[in-house]
Image 1 (tube, one colour):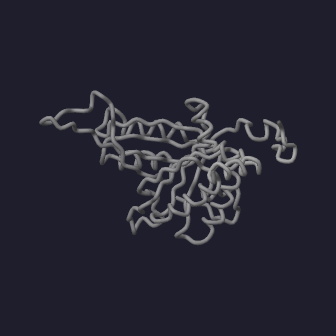
Image 2 (cartoon, each protein chain N blue to C red):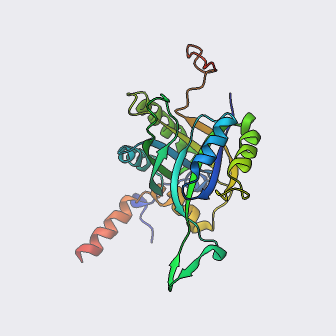
Image 3 (cartoon, rainbow over the protein chains, first blue to last red):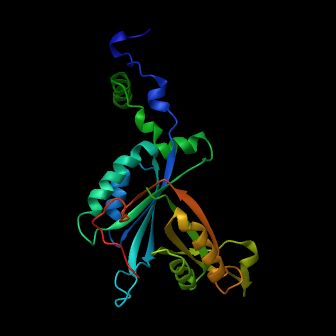
Length: 143
Length: 114
């Protein structure tokens, strides 16, 4: 039996499951600012983020030759999300000298299997639960 | 538009200055250094029953594509396998960069003179 009122609206398969390229993104910011980068990475559906402590070697003033401590954030972001991530970073880097940093994207050639690809691209998030599914879930929990 | 390359250099712990000096001589402006551990089997030694893993440093250097070969050659010469750094270096293509002040995009930026 099918209930037309609660039927799942038709969505083309391509809309949810189109293959998208992935970028391996490296973001270098001053120490203590990795939290913001993690936050915008999450907003842009980055599946994995890794924060490392690093040292910058670019010395603006050679007389004050103190290497700067940096936070280096490695993340994997979908190609279509890069523009949004980049725009947010540009805004952030323009706030002040302390907020400056760099980021660059390296395209990934391959990943180890479909499940890994799905995890990295956050594919499950596209599959929004329908109202029918929500009701069923509610009944299960109550019953 | 300038195309950039990310040069990754892995050297023995404490020898990143060799890498950065060589890279800067070849035209790189700076880089980021990370600490790491090597896992090459030949290098893992047992010392009184305790495994000693060799510590490594990783240098990430972003350079314009035009000077990539020059920087790689300089790193190989200054911190390569024949030096105390025992380093390797390789480059990866970068599709897009944020945060680098590119003179061709901002004509008001004064060019550095040496």
